[in-house]
Amino acid sequence: NMICYPNPYPKLYSILPPHRDDLDEMLAIVFTGVARPTDEDKRRIPFLVRRNRVRTALNWLKLNNVLYKDILISEKNIQSYTDNVIPSVITYAVDDTNNPLESRAVHDADDAIGSENDQECLFSVNGLAYDVLDPDNLEAVKAAALKHMMAGRALAIPHEPSPDTLWHNPDLFPNMFPWLFPYGVGGIANSTILGEMSEHSHKKHLMMYHDK
Image (cartoon, rainbow, N blue to C red):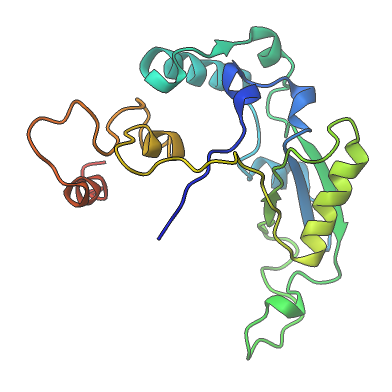
């Protein structure tokens, strides 16, 4: 059984993208490893921003996705980002090994994993999302992210008090998985379905990726 609660995101949803300075309220990035990530390492992770791509994507969504038709696209906020730069807070945590004891398999006795120093090495990147910390206290943001990473605990993301309905809610899946429903339509039990289609059959149809 599953129950879905909507997350509080009206600030992000009404005006996109958020200003670069506001992004620190919602996201922090922590690198862990035996060495600081290089610029080349940072370019290999999916956090770099390009203003023209952001603008193009938002214009497309506003034009084609019914769930984004009322958003305001802020050119001022877009210009607050620097091209090809990670836009959020970056914290580096020193570790003397990239194979911590608590993450090893039963028969794994190696102190380190990966490649030689002169070869490319992937970094583990974790996001931190929240709205319960003081947004004006940047040090608290970084401390919470670091504590989360070092202690291996999960973060609680607050949600609305009432769950979202799972029945006859055609916007549920387009809202949950916008990358699977780029036009914001096609959800379960939507009004454009001709004839009768069971929920099971519709989900089975959506899971067929051979034509994607």
